[in-house]
Image (tube, rainbow, N blue to C red; front, side, top):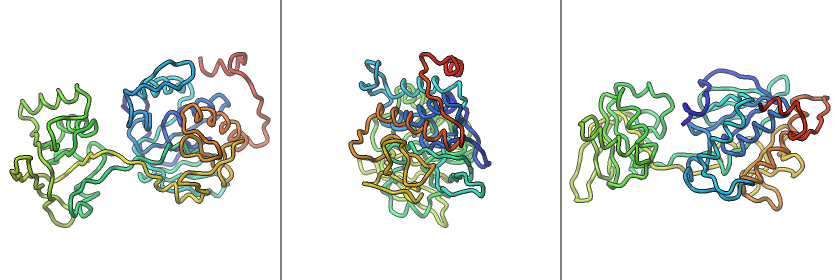
Length: 350
């Protein structure tokens, strides 16, 4: 989805911007719009490989009924419309990256570092990470941690890393089938294993996978993984068991395990912000945290009476943008304008 909807910045370089947004869910995306109306540029970091956050991961086709003036909209539709809305402001997306460190630069700005070596500095930071970062669920396989990061992976960060590999993909959802289909042309060999014959992925992906199985281009196993065989972090084969009790030995040098995602606060918990019930405490005037210049909006923000609703996050994004203005343009007066009558605002979005 990331390739279709946004231009993704390659990882590893240093960048400057006005506001760093952590989280590319609906609230983070709308924050780009509110900031853009005020002439503020933004870069967005998200651990997923596409924008949309929980809306895309948890309910892409489930109707959302409490977006003002929209009777019903799916998570996928809402994401696409928000991306279209912010397109005039040309935000930069750093996807498939986790924000791991927050510190000050010598000139007083904030600097975010990601797990992929990217650094971004800005006068202000806005955390819009929903309930936290999506973390992969690890398979219940004894000793799996011995192979993690070397021959067992829970995400595909760079497709080329898997060229000419003998790959076992484990899982039955969209991620498992998407990467089976995407890696098949470059892999030496691909096997797909799932514990049952029913798949949770999009019907089109299931049909394409089944076609590849019929053509003999991939192997499908309906079985449960029991053991990983290998030494020094390198997997050599996987032992699996079918429902009928038959044992399989599947040769592979790489395993991609897609067992779903869970929400965790992650490294943000170490940013030095005041936490309340595993969320970030903010004021209700500016949505600012206990650290000046660092804001939090959306589900992760905590204040008395807080409602975990997308529409609440949209309101918080507007308040945050007006407060962030003074960090981005210190000493400059902010003139409040309505988009219905301000020609300068209309020119920015047309």
